[in-house]
Image (cartoon, rainbow, N blue to C red):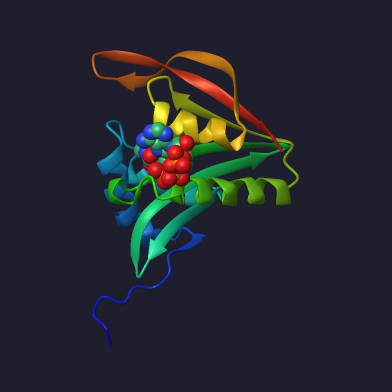
Amino acid sequence: MNAQWKEIPQIRCMLPADLDGVIAVEHEVFLFPWTHRNFSDSLNAGYHCRVLEQSGHIFGYGVMTIGADEAHLLTLSIAAGWQRQGWGEKLLQQFICIAREHHAKSMFLDVRESNRAAAKLYERIGFRNIAKRKDYYPAMGGREDSLVMELML
Ligand SMILES: CC(C)(COP(=O)(O)OP(=O)(O)OC[C@H]1O[C@@H](n2cnc3c(N)ncnc32)[C@H](O)[C@@H]1OP(=O)(O)O)[C@@H](O)C(=O)NCCC(=O)NCCS
């Protein structure tokens, strides 16, 4: 068998056993990462947690809550070596499908004001900027505002 053979990447539910891989990506892409506890609490709370996996390797993930008719995307990440290949958009579309299946009417998220890459992805999908939360995020030497974005579903 070809040693280079790799399975097709898949989106699946996050499992407790994925958390080391998730945390590795989290530390790679965020200056202020979520903790292991943040992710295990999300799993235990029954949040919608998904990973992107190829041959046992986790290279992306996201977490979303749905309550009443609102979905809230809490985090979305793609490992550095996998970015700009369409995976962020695929994973986001998957969350949009899940939210629609649960009859959510809109999806909300916060994004750092400086995170143009993520904001561009969200705008491309149809999210619009509806508000700003002052000093929402920790930042080097202070705090940073978030942009609150909404997608009507
Ligand atoms: C933001 C993020 C999830 C995007 O995932 P991705 O897989 O790289 O994005 P995609 O390849 O699906 O990009 C889809 C579109 O988003 C926009 N986009 C994504 N990354 C971009 C970048 N670095 N610069 C400008 N636009 C970007 C583009 O419009 C892109 O389409 P294009 O490649 O045809 O121009 C990813 O960069 C990431 O995980 N970043 C670090 C963590 C983070 O910031 N998460 C979001 C927190 S709110």
